[in-house]
Image 1 (tube, rainbow, N blue to C red):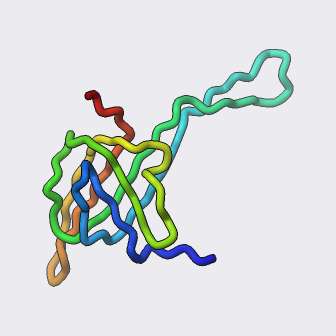
Image 2 (image 1 turned 120 degrees about the vertical axis):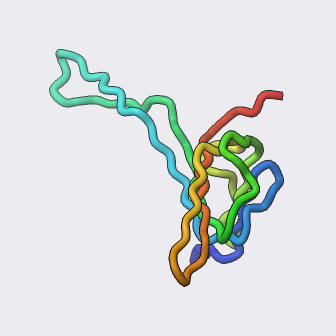
Length: 116
């Protein structure tokens, strides 16, 4: 079964971010060294997971750094939320363009629990 990016969409707090050009979902965790003096090899455990979504759209976003809400990613063969989280906060927005080319905006969303 082939996986296709085509028809993929992302929305933040119900606001579609389009036209979507690319998206990446990543998760990292601190490496906790739990090696003891009697061990003959290093042993590690993962710290608290840190998930993020970065996507690029054509033009500008109406969103701002600090905006938060439900994150939803859906697509042709990819229907899930952003890694392991469903609510996030925008931590970075970067717009760029060049001569005879389009303006694009990259947005980074980090895991966040929205308080009610």
